[in-house]
Image 1: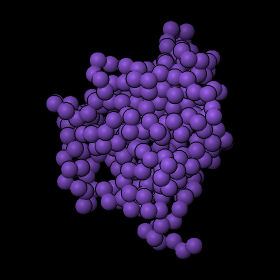
Image 2: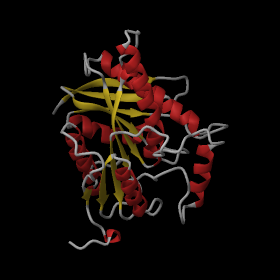
Image 3: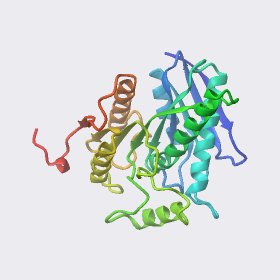
Image 4: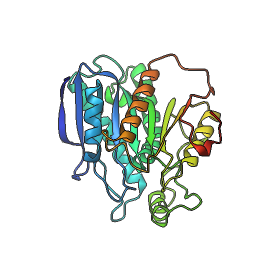
Length: 290
């Protein structure tokens, strides 16, 4: 069994939910994985993904389960995005103190389950822009924190809605929470022409998802490819809306295998811009013959 160090319940803000659990295998490989839980921003907890994080750490990945405040009181999605940005930087700082990625620009991959993936997609452009600005300051010999120079290497969305607008037959509860999250246009829509995009995206979806139909993931995959993003779509047969939380289930194991394969490919030379990454799995709704 691999030796693992780290920090549990490390705080990055005054609210109890503004905390993270960091697991660092010795040695660690690849970028730091930041896991964001689901629950449509009304429920859920970072510890929902702790078993998943432990499996990833045993596979050699540095990983953190990042908590964030929920949509309570007068909060909108802008507050949650701010939590993720601050929390990611805090996770990187803690990892660097523990010796992770010493002497290198730290790389991060956001991994979100359900609404956590959509929250990650909203935070990604902010992290990309901040990292670029910090890098330019560092190049100009202006003192900067290594954590703020982080490079977002990719985004993995597992069972995630493609955007902040309700879709056809969207459940009423989800319509309400999406409207609440957007607020008065305080949160930019993800994956728009105005937004910085991650270089690589993994979409993992269950073909039995009764909240977010798998066809929506297929549509997002096609749009990302058109935007020159290296997008990979993996369909998990028989999986519902939330499954990566149980890494020992068949669907959970399959999702982690897809994630592991994708992470390995991140370290390899990429395909040309706009070239489509593989669609993994071919359920009936893809209308393809084997």
